[in-house]
Length: 201
Image (cartoon, rainbow, N blue to C red; front, top):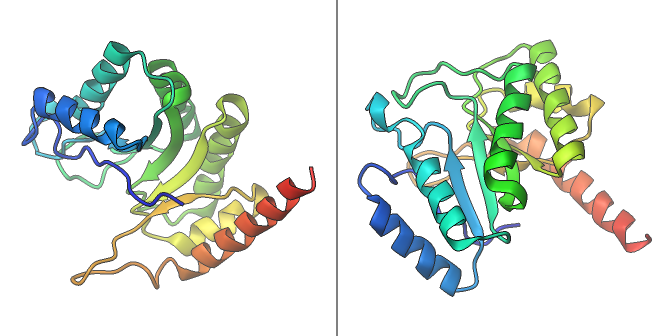
């Protein structure tokens, strides 16, 4: 479990490149390595800034020759206009996973499905199959963020038993904690089983 993760939703918008670099310097100086990013960051409704956040992160990684970050990349959104449009077709998932592995190499730690509004278990299962393939081929961990129907994911995941990193809203104004409860319980159980299994290897 991550205790803290550095977010990048404002990079390329309210946080310019130089300030983002300073934040990353300070973050690494504390010994932390977890960074969160998404294809549609910053979500500022300016098409010219689409994918600006990840570009800043790419530049920093290249400039410092880093190989020990733990980057979470969230994929699916097709723009930074706050629209509900997503693409999580199997071929797109593979394409984005391979692209981010090429860009970040072993710094890529987790690939998350972002803002999925689908309730089609078959389509979700096909997307998860691609995520499972990426986990095997490039050792990237699977994740979910802003999923509208966690219960459908729970059913679709029965074929793969993926253990997800999960991001959800949980604050004084809004909480998705209860809505994710069935999926979280299953994930906790599977995580414990994997942990016990690894002890006996």
